[in-house]
Length: 444
Ligand SMILES: Cc1cc2nc3c(=O)[nH]c(=O)nc-3n(C[C@H](O)[C@H](O)[C@H](O)COP(=O)(O)O)c2cc1C
Image (cartoon, rainbow, N blue to C red; front, side, top):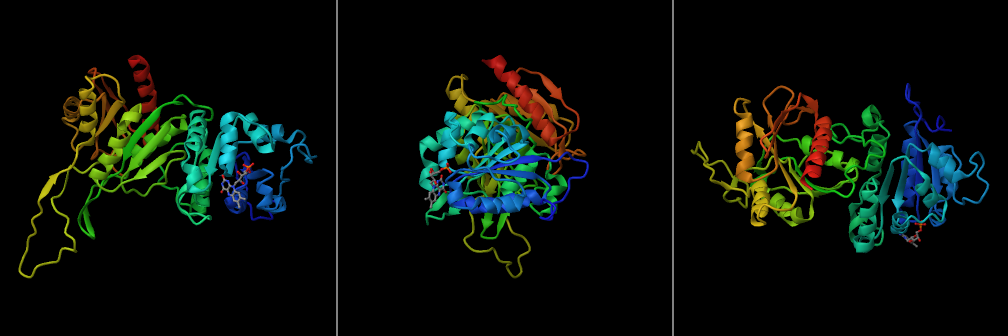
C-alpha cells in the first residue's frame, strides 16, 4: 500500500520501520499527515493508538494511510502481529510518539505499561522521539517538566513543543511542533534526512546536528548550556551590526550533547538552522539578551560552551527612525560602546566562588591569521578564567564561519594544547564531548 501512496522505495537502503504512537490529544489529527509523509518516504509506519487517541481519529484512517494494521487493543487479535507490542518493539528503528500527551509522558517516566503503546515503549530498544502537545498550563506544570527531564536523562529525544495559539484558545508553549519539523527529526534519526528531507523541501539542509548513536546515553544527567550564532546590534529600526557566524559549530555541539542524553539549552542568535532534536532553544538577538539568558542559567548547568560570535561593540544609541542620507554629507560617524563579555562574566562568577565548583567553562576563539593563534587562545583563557579555549583561524580554508568543517586547537588551562585535523563540525563536536567527559571525570 506504500506504493499506492506514492511511496518512494529507498534504493540501496534497508527499509526502515517507524512505530508511530498516537495519543489522545487534540493534535492527533496531525499525526495522519505525519504518517502519510513518512510513508511517502518509503518508511514502513506501524501505528499504535491509545484508546483515547482512537476517540479523536479513527484507526482506519491510519490503516489506509500506511497500509499497515493499526494496534489499539493489545489483547485483541492483531493479524500478522502475534504479541503485537513485542513484535513492534523488535521491528522498530524508531519509536515516535506524536502527539505525546502529558499522560503518556508521565506513564513512560514512571515505567507504567498498561496499554499497547506504553508497553511497546518499555520493550523497545530503538531511539525514542517524543513530540509533546498539550495546554500551556499543563506543559508548564513542574511534574510534566520533571517527567520530561527523567526521560531526557534516559536518552529519550524530544521535539517541540512550539509556541502559539492552542486549540483551547490559550497562547503559549504546548502546540505540537510543526509536522515538517517532526518529520525532519525522525528522518534524521533514521539516517534518511540527506536528500529525503530536501526532496520534501523541509529545509534540513544546513542542519548541523548529528544522528545520535542509538543507546549512547553517556552524558545522561549532564546539564549543558551552549551559545551559538552571531548577535545583531541594532542601529536603527532596519539596520544592525553583526558578523558572519552561521551558528553551525554551536548547533553541532548542542546536538551532539543532546544525542548522548544531556539536557541541553541552546541560547541562539539569529541563524538559519533547524533546532537540534531534543534541545531547548532560547532565541536572542543582541549581546545583552544573550548575556541575560546565560546569566539566568549559568548556575544550574554542568558545562557552559560559549560558541557564539558575540558582538564586542554595539551602537551607543539606537535611532528610533531609519537613518537618512543627509544632503551634502559624505560620512556618518558611529559611536560604539562595549557589550557585556559573557565568558568573562562566567569566569568572574567562578572567581567569586574562590575558583571552586560551578560549570566547566569552554570558550571559542575565532581569530584571523594563524600565526599567534595558540598564544591568543592562552591569553583569552587566562583573562577569562575558563577551563578550555577552542581556537580556530576563521580565515583558513575549510574553517570558521559558514563552513561544515573546522580545524581547531584545544588550549587547556593546565597548559596542554591539542591540534585536531580538519574535521566535520559534527565530528569536532563529538570529539569535544569525549574530551569534556574525560576532563569532568578527572575533575571529580
Ligand atoms: C478535547 C480534548 C482534548 C485534549 N487534548 C489534550 C492534549 O492536547 N494534550 C494532553 O496531554 N491531553 C489532552 N487531553 C487529555 C487526554 O485526552 C487525557 O489526559 C487522556 O487520559 C490521555 O490518554 P492517552 O495518553 O492514553 O492517550 C484532551 C482531552 C480532551 C477531551
